[in-house]
Length: 141
Image (cartoon, rainbow, N blue to C red; front, side, top):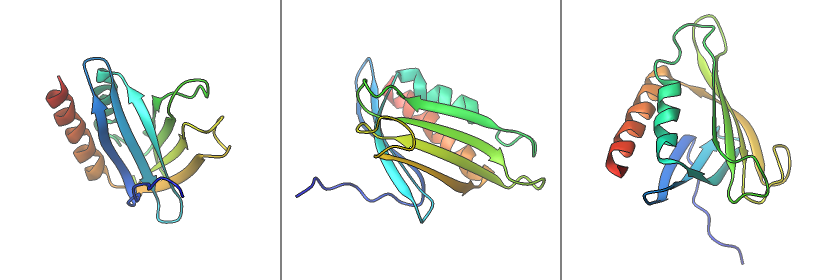
């Protein structure tokens, strides 16, 4: 019998599991309808605001691209890591995010307990996402 895991909804979902004065632990889930994954990730308190700041105003042009790393990529450390590459797939500004997620039990991307997927995204959803991070950050301070 295995431990019950939460269902991953399409898109990117972040749930704060735990926080104290030193660290925030989040459950990061992502799905494109075909592939999905989730990982528990530790962040510093400014990790969420740095993430939001990096994405603020994306996409500013069809050639705009941004990369965000969260968590750890060292398999000797606890919990997982995420690499997200945001870009536009065409000159009309249709945005996508390519996500590589490494769970705690994974030695690296492409190994067991890792996932790589692409999700189409709406610029308005990114704005909402960054606003939510700002609210979370204010509540945790």
